[in-house]
Amino acid sequence: MTGKSKAISNVPIHLSIYSPHVVNLTLIDLPGLTKVAVEGQPESIVQDIENMVRTYVDKPNSIILAISPANQDIATSDAIKLAKEVDPTGERTFGVVTKLDLMDKGTNAIDVLEGRSYRLQHPWVGIVNRSQADINKNVDMLAARRKEQEYFQSSPDYGHLAHKMGAEYLAKLLSQHLEAVIKAKIPSIISMINKTVDEIEAELDRLGRPIGGDAGAQLYTILDMCRAFDRVFKEHLDGG
Image (tube, rainbow, N blue to C red; front, side, top):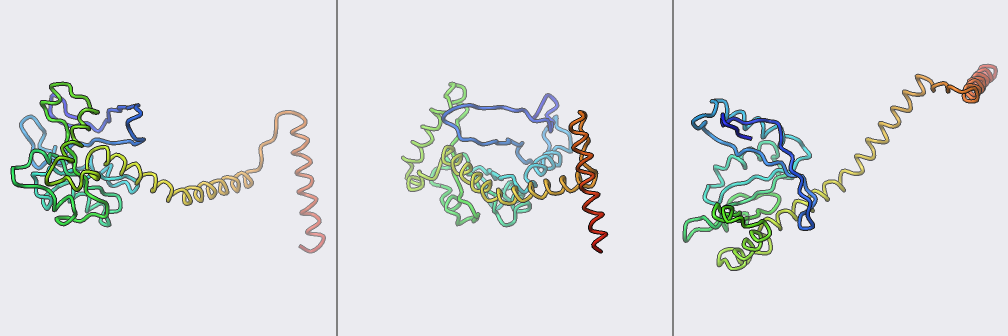
């Protein structure tokens, strides 16, 4: 988040969206990686942003959206570079190419989207966001998504990929991946819970069960102690 000082804050702003047209996802929008501090920014801004981004992408359960503009060489993408550092196998990295509609005439990003320029474990997805003119005209997101699909379907370059492009497809792809990850982790989560329960019960046995406050509960505790003493005593008599 940038303020008057053009610095950043690690305090997040939470925005909840409820709609039948969205999938169940939690997205964290991080500041874009930068190489130089502009006027009004502290000299540490470059490292500050990278440190903030790393606190999220370093987490092994996070899904990384490595976003790069279409008019930038993927080989020099800071997002891809950082994603490769923290996720060398690419198991949790999705590549996203933006601004496809703003590329110079006669050029396209087919090699990137089809994985020839830089191959990822998951498919690349191209998206077309609202332009500043659309924002100024208050074009809503549903209309923007329809316009985006029309762009891909009518594009001579991307028409054959239209069914695998766009923000809606990206959201579904991420939701399906998240569901698969959760299902895969359920057995280990159950195992961890059972282990924790066993450890707590063992600790309770070591400490001794609490004595109830009423006379009936206290009598039950005394009888239980007597039975335990009787059992141990018999074991000793039997040479156990």
